Image (tube, rainbow, N blue to C red; front, side, top):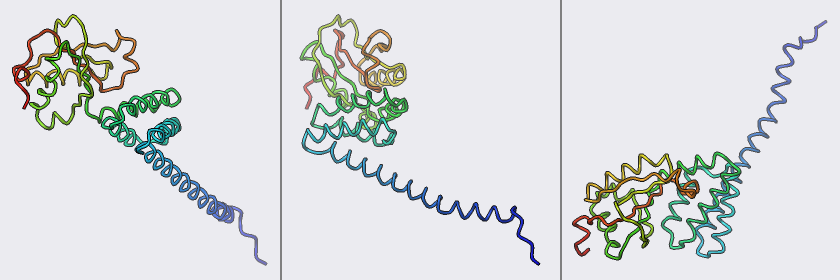
Length: 233
């Protein structure tokens, strides 16, 4: 008469038999979710790059939703910011940045991803001038830089202002941007523009909402570099 097999031999077989369908179901669920996330990203990109402003706004709303739910890789944030930065639609970039800032309130990881993404983009420098004679100077200086340095800088706008103008200033708004600000000041000194770096991270209330890797150059009453006084050909 044969004796029943010990439970210690049968139990592992039963467990493995039960785990097979669970594993298959888990893989299927993961694959479905991955496909859905990929589809959402494609839809978001299509809408944000559409020629119609209304669709771009819907795309930004979708972008914000996906950010809040950790469904946008940092590479996509970088790509979207880069696209908006060069877009002819001047409203796209501020709308995109506003969506990211809102998403960061619901998802702390978005802030870190945003800082990483903006660090990969060219440094954005808004130029402030005292008079029309200074307007051409940023472009002249940029042309004199090496191509590798030039690729890391963009001038979105030249803005007329009135201020004391005691020095030429390079202003930064994030503590993390101090090193980059000092590097930019040194870079511009090689083409004749002496800049004093100024930290506004704690003295200006709007600094906390400023985009990382964003700076301002304020031209003062100091003499312009020699090249700026020559007609740009």
